[in-house]
Image 1 (cartoon, rainbow, N blue to C red):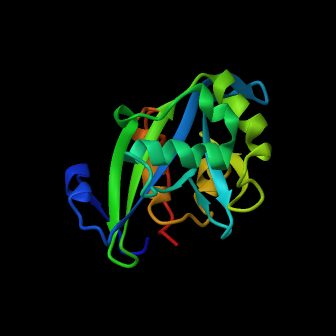
Image 2: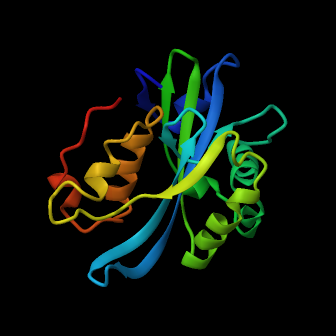
Image 3: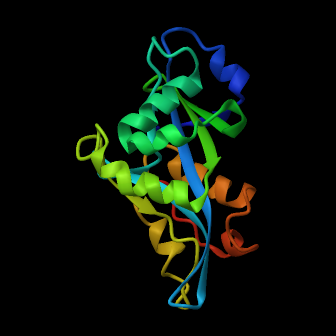
Length: 195
């Protein structure tokens, strides 16, 4: 969504019928493990490689038959991630932000859902059997929530990828607001310009 801007949910919902609404969710879980026995993982955060070669969050467009944004989001999550999504539901209380873009007339709503590590691993394990796997979704990836000694590996290298719309901004805001990173890591990052 080139030229996107953040708006309040009430403003986004008041837009006319010629606007389309899309919902996406960051799924995350505490992860007590350590990489190489020394680098704390802290949390597992899922993103996906999309059909267009860009990274984004699972989700998609809300359809007319969906009774609310969250119904559309949960339907899309089942289509993209499979039946493991039936074990929980993303709710309005998981809502984080909305961004609009004039061209195309799309409102992107962003959610973050905390899972158990077992739930997240079940999503990862069952995603290859999902309806849209291999079509709209090329695979899931975990966001590396650490910076290697060289200062470039881990999250800094991950952020060099191409992201769809506001996904990079949404990721960084969520990592900071939900305290998924060690304090101060985001401030030390050299954030690449949006691509």
